[in-house]
Image 1 (cartoon, one colour):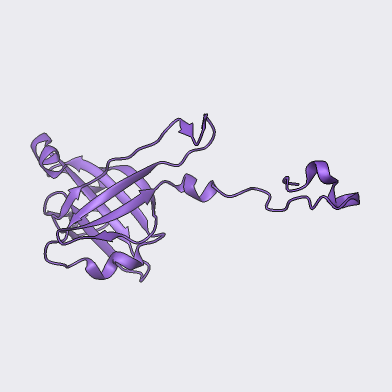
Image 2: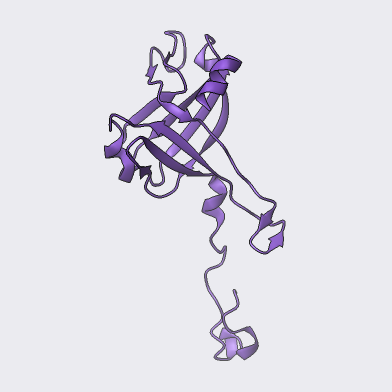
Length: 165
């Protein structure tokens, strides 16, 4: 993705907020914010290979409609092993991906993705791949965790056993 972004005159940046409290700043090209930006004079390493390819489906499981989570991957060039230590500390990390014109102020960049990393990142000899999900993943839990026991009275009868209250 870096090559197509470069030829189009755009830069993609990513802010990766690790569990340890540090922030990793990467971009498709070497990039630094301006001293007048809201994040002043911050260098972004030009190691972002695949800025974002997001997937969302209208089919959730076996039915059309309903709530479905979107997912994506963020791929960082890791040939030097600089990002190996972060692989296990990114589960639940907030990731923000922005896109802007080359040479423009970082404050003018558009947020393309603001979501969470899911699970440990995948590390191979050349790259670190972070698996991303939108915040809808957090909604994939029952609103009501309690179920009827089917024992009678207020616990419902056998007809409602194991159904949500």
